Image (cartoon, rainbow, N blue to C red):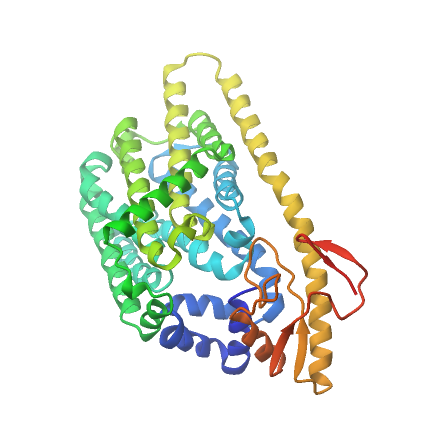
Length: 458
């Protein structure tokens, strides 16, 4: 859908580095983005089919490693499988609690920029958490700087979130970290910030970024203009209204509560890199980082999307991972407080938390059933049309009809009224045609089938 129609022929003809050059020179300047897109576009349709599974497994592995590293550095031991459970619940609500899962996760072009990117940002902390000795600390700082440059050319929004979080760590380090690690944490954070700034400046200076700003008329709309800031604020408040009323996010709180209840201090307090927790201060700092970074992300996307920033759900994920992690942290702190107070029945609370995780998981699964059915129907129709267009191109046809098969408000080469959209030229290029024309009905025989409010028929 949409962008992929233009990515595929470029990678086919010029390889992955040809797409990287296109991103840098023409599209948006995102070098790292072009590299990741090229890696899945190198395997055309199969790359798109396998992207969700592979990226999902990668994100789960990284979050699992992050949770395990945090527990190890705080000297907390848990029953086997608990870190994986917590990481799995965090990932589940992050991927599937948003209003448009197809665009945020199953659409590779959006997932690379806004869903995988924030997880990679969080994973950059793993080397620091696992560092032992001077060499390990130096390596962690180098990884932070390199990851910052990479993120700066992958996702502007994820870079903004990183800068806000790392800046908060530098300023609030005396409230969070033990004195012996404070200097290292600050150096690491500053290295990550320097890398993100360098990568972002590299992106903004690229000809592709200038072309993108011109294409969307973003140059004439200042992000700092009062009307732009006000419009971004209204959009952000509407987004927050949707996020805060999505009950499935309680799954992250429940998973954190379980972790706080079953975790045991397995090492002396002198080994922990964190100061004794001040729940109110910690959650306040985290909440402020989320609210500020989310608004800034909305501000920088508003000149491009305008009021449609509210429906551009894919751009929410850059700061929603921070929200989910904050919810899990709140659950952990609540679980620790309950365990320390020894009030009530811990077994009952554990059972309720586990049940909440199960209910939230079921709540996430129900909408996916309908989405899965729609994706399956679309896949069948897409495959038949693909075979039809390939056969026509092989016969020497130069102009062929195309029927849109929309899903999740994705852009198609033609709208329902036949309005031509920009991917149409890329579709023709992909199949070796001069152009494609709008066909309200499929020219191949599949039998009538309702799809997306249309009747697809012979």
